[in-house]
Image (cartoon, rainbow, N blue to C red; front, top):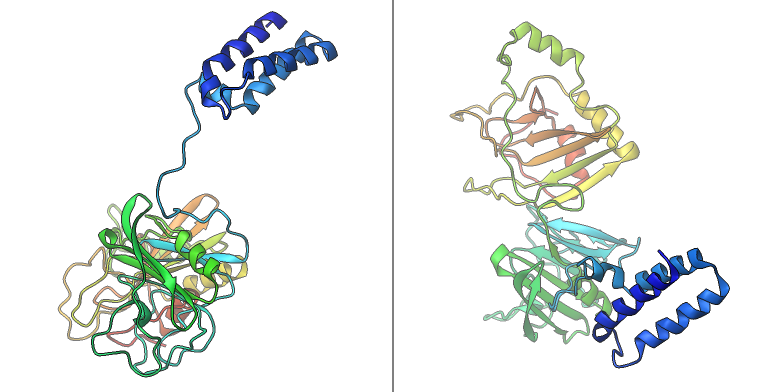
Length: 394
């Protein structure tokens, strides 16, 4: 491209986009012409051509030439993601929603026997029943299916002594990940800054109470709705083909061959790069199962290696069905937790079940038995409670 061609391209391009630039009424073309002239005096033709391209890129015109204009930010009140996150904040996931909280916050330290430490509350499972007053300076962030805590909801009979005073916070309509929501923010009589974001269509809400207005706003702003969370866990239960029951054989293979294959092949990779623990909770006393994730965690390094070793040490074959239960065919959604083990670009999925008929571990090809100690190893990282309908071996 000659120098004249470059100057013509620059002039015509800026003339056609002059109205889109800030201060479009200024003589933008003249300024560019002067700049090109100065560069012409300092460089040869090849240098001038490269400089002209640099001018186009810096001005954001090259994308316009090819029809790829920068997208405008969405006109919503709630940011889908907090872009100012740093290493001292972490993601927490529950019910298909995620928020960022300060990394030093504890997990599920709320309600009965709570301390004054800041905490995120999600997927708590069964808890002790007692009354422990919430300290007036305690900082909390809840992920639940409705706004949590008496400070943000009217209590017709009045709050028990020691609870924060109920107060109504100003509300406004917003969007979260493109889904309509309602956001409420304000200051409580005890001095804390509080807020909620309720996404009724997804049956999820975030409630925050902190001592700092910026912290409350930042947690609320970070809320996003996801199908796969930060730990790599599906946020809804998915059907998985069950492994053959003990005594059954895979299609085309004899029982002896199947048993020998199980002896030779580790149940899971022994040195996984990471393990995601996805907890979906146990059925309630009526036998109803939630199909959304309650909590998740991702292990790496020594933690992942130790859990893999414990899984590989499990006794082959699933746990026997509890006595007295009429067990039909296995339920493909009948698992309380899912383990995702990643190794050199591959992923092994292990269903973990401890209630119902098909108890134990299932990697899709074989089964292994679950014990109380192994269940504790699996569920420990997610810091969520769990219940057992029938005892497991120690």
